[in-house]
Length: 181
Image (cartoon, rainbow, N blue to C red; front, side, top):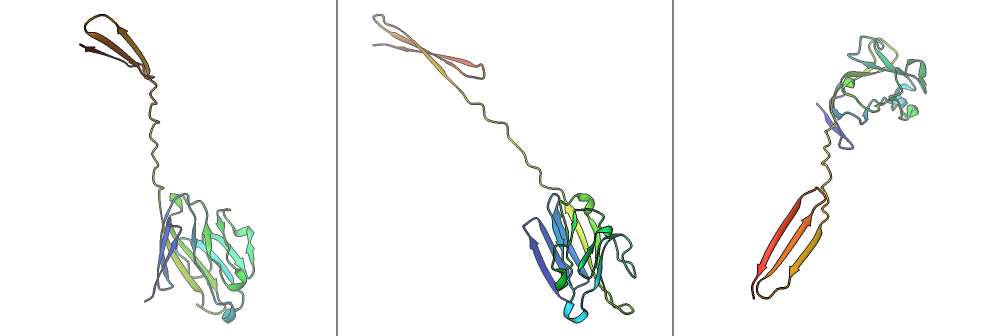
């Protein structure tokens, strides 16, 4: 039993148990690369297909994209969101799914077609796509402008000062202070 862990930009985590199953948890709006490699030195260049859902006994039933040796078969690509950006000449046929949505969740399979009866390499993935965290915006804080008006009556005896504050949100505050000498 071997376990490997891959982390992609903190928005996608894939855990693979042996070569047969990887579980990936991702966030919508981001991309994921489902890893699939084969040994070119042992097998030379091969045909590969990517399937949506459980892989059938042979071939790919719900084909997403396929490769004939060094050539991506464009007639098989069901969406431009499915890309094979690996080095095909080195056996890297990893599938990148761009701009994930919650409808992308489910099973995926990579079949490396090795000549002979039941020789194919199969790599299975269970993809979970969580919705992106909601961002909240707070309304801007009202900026206050104040107008100070001071009136003073100079009469012998007590002095009275009146301060009036007018704020931009239409509130007026009046303060009266009386000082005696």
